[in-house]
Image (cartoon, rainbow, N blue to C red):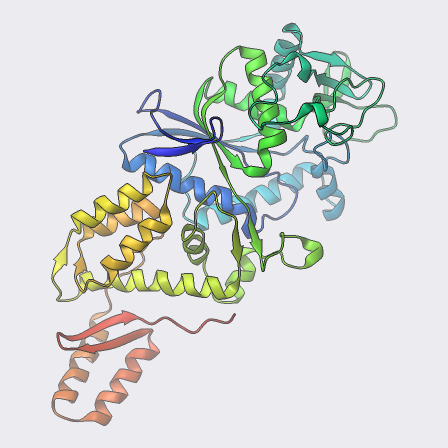
Length: 459
């Protein structure tokens, strides 16, 4: 199994430290608003990673965090806490907002058929552990105090710029942190924020005799240390995390514990909509409820995502989603062949080809090209092959393609008999009755087959 490692900027063979407990951490959502379809890109692609690991005989221990404090509206360690912003918008407490949006996130997570992590960790459950990590960093000499908070001095961590290949010499003042007499370097970042006089912050904890709250980057280092221990095997996230969030995580964790944070780093690219960045101001933000209104399921969206590669930027449109839906329905019709009197196959050679694609840096698009050929073979899949496909992609191709009822089978038999007797009007009437129940009849030299009808979709 080979994966692209952001740490080394090359595709490498993945060898876990312990095949029975592959340690994986995936950056989770900040629960201050509803997650749109673009937000689920990461979680869907990393579900594919988990599935491919399992198919290779590995067992994972995966942690997903939930950010419910400390994520400011700017990466420059200024601006409003996003949770406070959400609470003001909703007229609720920050705790109520966090619970509401976390519940919505998890509902969509499960509707996508994504595998449950070993643990889902809320940042606010790790405040005391955050403080211990801050103490370790301070003891190691990485921190300095300001009226704004405790900051990490990146000049004392020589490899700070390596991960994201940052040009610290030319990093413009204010690009990362607004300079003041107290802040030493443009790349320095806060690990613990102080509540200053006159500030109103709903979430705050006492530390060193003052009230404050953890910086956004701190929670991931803390949760990884507490739940998995260093080094982990794989750390996942979006490409936007590379230059700031993940770079800061590495500095914190390796500065505090003196160990490599993660052996592999995987990053997915963004999706755009009609060629533009997803933005509420542009009116191109879509939620799964919007997809449902147009007749599409979360599985249709997952199918669309997997038709491309996790490292490629994808452009979403409803026309493309319609094509993905049609492809998924073709796969389900292929699965339906197992209920019919057609020769069945394990497709052993094709299964090996699919695994070869998936083991080549999660090449799901290549795997689907193989599956397309299988679906056109005219052979029916064995239950074992369908289980493999469902295990690999989580698209529920076999699971959601049951046999048709005995009543429908009887109608199909009657329709065939009517055609044979040249009672074409009766045959047409029976065909239409069967079609009304979502089943399309396909006449061929081998006899009649039935398929799930691909309905016209609203684009």
